[in-house]
Image (tube, rainbow, N blue to C red):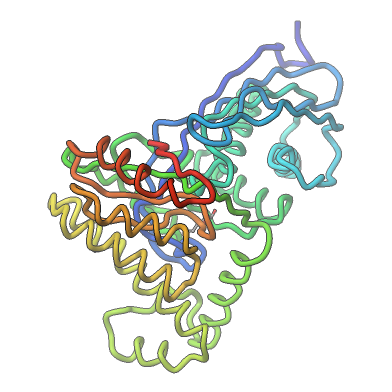
Length: 369
Ligand code: GLA
């Protein structure tokens, strides 16, 4: 059976979650990031159909590791429809619109999502969904896409169709991420190198249980403040400033609050990424842990994207045997905590942190990885 030239067949695609080791809120400031793929996945299955209609369904979507699953949900629309609805299906409709705008012929299809990546947990569930949808569409409709163009297309869809002003890190991490190595990505040139993670480094990711949203509010505000700071400092992007030089530091200190704090976070965080890569390459885990801690302090005090619950989780993590450093990871305002830990003690550390945090917590935290 075929539609035009396309044989009808089902395609299945799996895309991993990512955790950003360090380099937070630098990706829309031309800075460096260091995400790594996690061994939890979002799967889509897609089958083209003859009519020009799309049906998107959730199969089994976990809201939290070992936690409840999303109620089955579905929506149907015409493939030419360009109106967002304001729900999860916008991620699929958005990439369809972008592919069609780029001149690719997309017909109707059925798509089902099964996912172990908790939505809103700061682990790039939305980028994973969009990357998986584009890959499946490309395979089903015989579209050739360069992988970096795929990542750019996903960012564009999320910026324009979904309306979330996110950077390029998550789609790049979901497209190129591999287990046990991190991507040291320059978000200005989109060049990256793979940094192997030392076998002695354990990475524990703990979902705080409180989820975030980037389409509204504070994420957008941070981005606008960074742009305002760059304009005031007469640079095209904040990462162009060198945190190590006195003139740059003085110029940042002279900005009106809170732009001074926002800019300080970005330039110091950008510098920390380079230092963290050097520490990982040298196997200096203590230094890596100290940089992770410094990143959290900067995100909490200068960028102000942490929450009291996350701060408590981070401080419990730091007091746990074997832990090298801990910080909020992802966009902030909830989501997950990254704990760098001596590899042999990772399982015990994760369990101990959650056991100490949960009795006084409004929402239970859970170890994701
Ligand atoms: C979210 C966005 C990314 C990045 C991070 C913060 O995950 O999707 O583009 O800005 O927040 O580092």
